[in-house]
Length: 443
Image 1 (tube, one colour):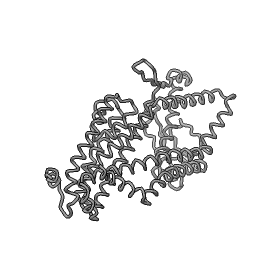
Image 2 (tube, one colour):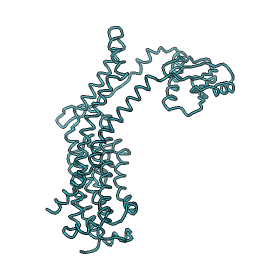
Image 3 (tube, rainbow, N blue to C red):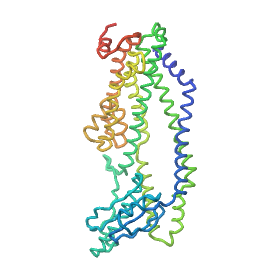
Image 4 (tube, one colour):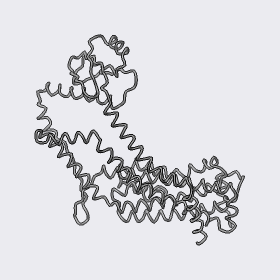
């Protein structure tokens, strides 16, 4: 065990003392808030300097009324469609909107002509303007008062509560849990894959430099593999913790700095001033404040300490499981190019867990497929962290953890049998048949 500990120290110190580690550990948390700040700054400046774009309107129905707003200036044209197209083509305006004589119950034939493909947001806003006016036409046709219609179709907002075994109520939010599971699952997938590949590359480098021949003269290959995996795991965990702390702090500072200059905040202040004179605005603000309070109440019910523990456990467990397999691949080949054919099969189960996160777990976290994905060791690192926020029975979590530990021990044993032979083999053309032969070889 002392020899394994020495290898862990060697792998940890070799990587931590490198300038590349220090640069990556410090720069990444600085880059992300800088990118966020830069994008927010550009968005603010763009919104402040944005000019309304001109839209030509040929309305043969004579029904619609287009009013200029901050985004669009509508210019009415009265000519045949072909002439309108030619006239539009001679300008640098955004689009030509053509409205034929239509039946409001079946508004077909409305078209937009542009020189470049407009954004989906702009097309959606034009569609919304048309749909709103058609809605008003129908109300008038059926002599329905719009105010009455709104009272007949109120907006329903379901408040979610979880009932404990003791009958206690706890507020909940599927949307909040979805976002949390989404973020955690992606983080696990990224870090397991990134640091697993680092193990494989480290083994290849040592093998090709012949350093390993000196090392294995005083330590068993299995001890070398185990020490390398645990050493790089400690580096990854340290770097991950530093990133989380720095990114959280710096992102909060960045958003706080720009928050004081946000146009939305200025609008909120203006709305606050109009409380006494505009009851509708006051009601809207109260609803918004209620949503914020509800969000904070839902967030307070999430067991973040448990989720953090589960995340760290599956990060380490998944990393160790796949790290052993990546180490075996690295020991069997002589270059990164040769490793490609063996690397992909190793990552397939991890990819299945990643795709299952979106296809099954986030859609139905308590379904049978979600259960199996979260207990099978090769998919559980991604699946369980994506599912844990929704609430997982303790027995399922315990079963998943035990199986993940067992999976790590199994893959380490399999990888060790390949590693002990492959690490000393150079210039050998490796295939799956050769790997099977190394695995079965006694020694």
